[in-house]
Image (cartoon, rainbow, N blue to C red; front, top):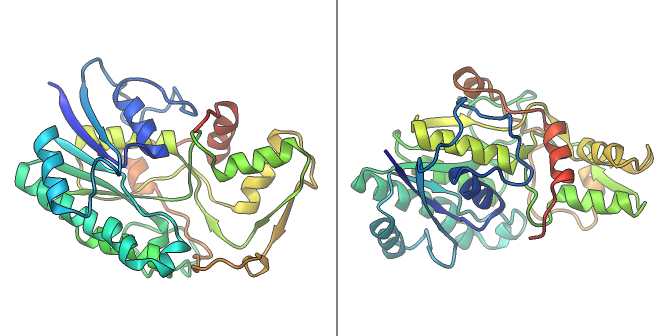
Length: 302
């Protein structure tokens, strides 16, 4: 039986990778061996409608109602998000409209139509003071408007909805921070990256493949999803430099306080996600170093 899936925010890096996976195609940067539920996507398993921000405003009730009436989905995967962390400090209304009102409206609409909602949140709901990787049961305490808006969106979801928290998402499409690092390495230009913000890197393709599993199984509840291992931004830059033969002097570690200009929004010092719960039910995601290597091999144009 075919499952109808509506994807919001379908033009983003995770959205485009998800559309590929749902159609049975491995997106660039994807790991052909990674199947969280050990089941490849079968022919005709999913019927997919992907809507961009221009086509669906998740903060508008009428727009949401039209989209669900048109697509008649069994599952809605919400990837629409306001992700400009620094700009959000001065643009809170717009940020909350997408990150809180959007999930609230979609959750309500799904409850009315019988569809299942899968929505994506962030590690920035945490303040980074725990001193260890965060579990699903740890109490959020966001530092920024962006983090607070995502936490508000989580709370507007129903218990039957599936909420996936992830972090530091990097994709092949477009220009991610990894590709900025790689371009500098290839030109022999050194880089400086902070070594006092620790998190978990997540491949857009690996996350998208997890979302396929969520669309299949509709587990409900809260799940932490990220590639294996924690890192700082300096660690990522040093790894990119090593892969490209840039030499030990390519990346220099600095403190967040040394950034010029300083970031407008505060970031958690350590917000890596503990994915034990996810791995116990399905499968551990590949190590972040492998994911970064795939991004460099398979880079495509925006």
